[in-house]
Length: 190
Length: 417
Image (cartoon, rainbow over all chains, first blue to last red; front, side, top):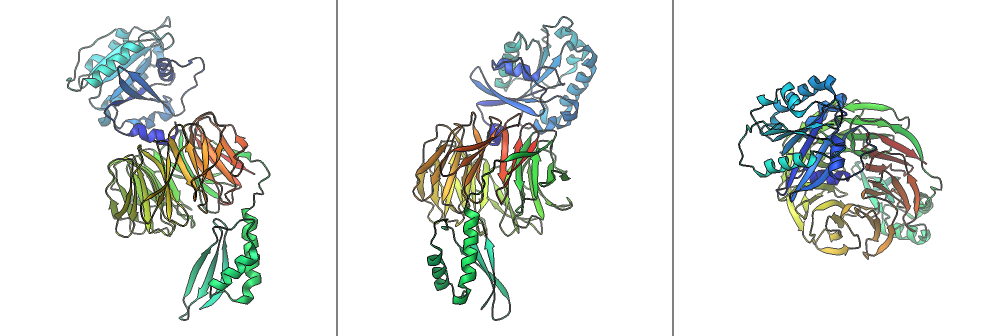
């Protein structure tokens, strides 16, 4: 990739969109990205910085920035906020213990000026696990219905099986493409 | 006029004459010996210098001869030993961007996504200073070599900061760019700073006052590369608008726009004499340009993918290109002929550099290795392995016996031979 590639991905381009993937550590951000680009997901280490992947979706080139979620590096998420077209927030649906923590982090992101108004997709990941909360329960638990300033959607998925990933990405591309759409779309719990 | 003493400059080879004028003031004069090689006929050269240079009398010949032999000795490749891993520095909590040595090589600096720049002791591996204050990624960094008492940092926060390299004091914050600063440089005298930005402009700043002296307007896309010439009178900028511009630093005006590339420019540089400059492009070619006329002298082809970095050796006799095709190519500057192809990396090469004597080339790659190559044969002499993610930056020190590599794995490694 190299530093020059980083600069080229910073550059604004009409045919390309920039997606930011955030979420707590171990929520499965990197795994989702690797699964979407059909890479091996058996050996994934905690992300110590970031990964960038370019995905093609409906003739859109998506430059997807996956940022490490460990607590010590969360303050640096804002390094990556500029010129973001959509935010993907990943939640480990089986990690009930940290549901409140992930809600707090998401709440803070929604307050950020630089992310104001951009579409939000929440991946309720790890649905393949038995104790996973359903997307609608997460939605209720995190009071997602109070989000009024942007289009948003929660999509149940499993990065392991790939289930739900495409649906989620298609929603994102549709929202980016549809620049005239207004905010405040209805809740669509999967 | 009276000659006081000789000073030596190893890379590129040259002799500096320090002399007194009649009015008592002291001046310096440089005699460049860019064509000096181990095969040079020293007697012929000594006679020629004494003939052409009124400051050097006949009786100085033995001293001059000794100095030239010393310069030749420095050009020979004595690096028979391999480099070994000297230290792993868990440098930053997020990936590194660029790294750079001061001239003597006893200190180096690293920039990072963690918004800091750190100053390191090369000999002990100790962290000397953390330069904190930027609000976003510290991307471009530089010492004011050869002095080394100041550091500049350019950030995605749109500002450039000037620091004291000994105690970390902040002298100035240069504000004015509308978007990320991605390249910067001190002029050779250390009096002016140039910054290039994603806002399509470059700016010249006064080191003392902190004021913007000139805004270089003209590019229609992001500026990602800039360099001063050897005398600091011109600056070259490479842009994503497919052109290179040469500017006069005194008035901030464009001297030439170099057009001909069919893709974004990735890297630019002047040769030491500053009569030529090179540009590498996403269009897979490297071009050599005549600085005075702005004409393209050679177009260097052969790479099968984007060229990501280009670099002259210290005398300017050769240049090397680094490509996303995983190879580097060495070219003769005069003829434009490809002299060797450096084959072995398993991923794109993002950075390339000659060692100062010009005998070795260092490449950094996304395959997590850096490699050292013999310039003449093109053979890979060594693979520097150990980083666990791609290498973004690498550098030789002035003496060519120490290497630093900076990686996306958040570490920096020091290699010695």
